[in-house]
Length: 69
Image (cartoon, rainbow, N blue to C red; front, side, top):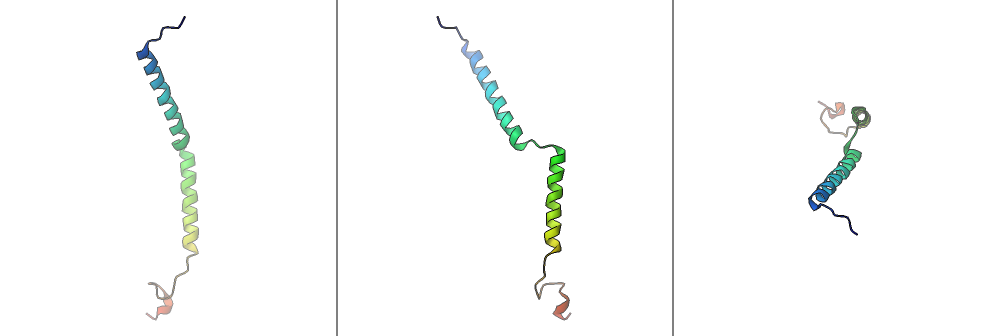
């Protein structure tokens, strides 16, 4: 004999499970600790300073001492 199921309860349980699964996926994708965010920010700043420090100015750019001003 089949078990009697209340459809309203079944729908609510399924909706809760679906929301929990979506929340778990979002935590995995977007959930980072404060320390991880700071580390990523520091790495990005360091690489930006490195690139800026090795930038060669082209002749004729403002601030170039060889432009005769």
